[in-house]
Image 1 (cartoon, rainbow, N blue to C red):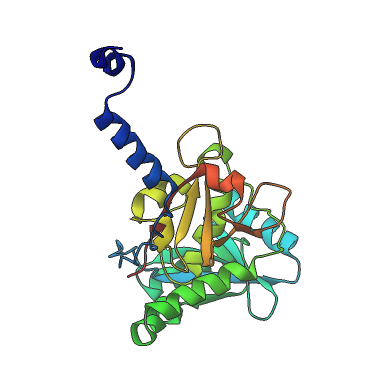
Image 2: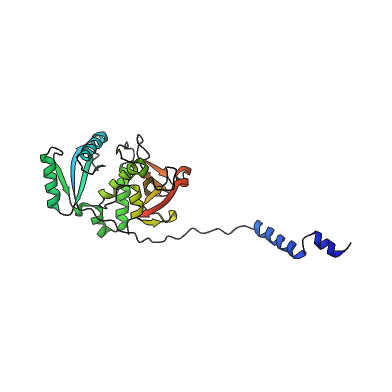
Length: 261
């Protein structure tokens, strides 16, 4: 039989040799890819909270939420938080001077909107203490504050679930309580932060998701470490801990944002 006929009917020796090498390489054990090293993030600083009015102390979260709603009806942007004593307290306002905060509080008291009040000063926030104790302290305080909400019934009552107003009410409260003036909606929070890879997330960063069926931010939570975050799932459910590895959140994860140096 003619040799040229054989070469025409079959692959050339060089091609056969290359195929054998490819098979050997494919069967060989693959080298382990090392994890990405931590990349320090220079976060965009958020505005600091100034003087804030604190009013009301409730043993029931429902009563605290009711008070918040009544304040909002009077044009007061308020939120409640869980105090170390176990009581639910309410804060609102961000004033450049203590005098302005005091005048506003007196006006609200005279009109019967609030009763007794307390002025929170810039030095009372965790941000002020972090100047000496470091940013790790601030991150830990943000996580501690978020953890204090776990198990609390979600009662914020946002105006636009599509924009993530409800869930972002939690993150806003956590940040403002610690002295950082985080915007109200999840979209604004996403746009104001510094992007952070999932592998480089740190305690106190925020994690964002697209849960409304389109590729835009509609949900947010506070990252607490070890792949976990705290969030307000939906109306009627309690604030809880969840994992980024859960398929629902893994499929909808948009990105992380940092606001702390």
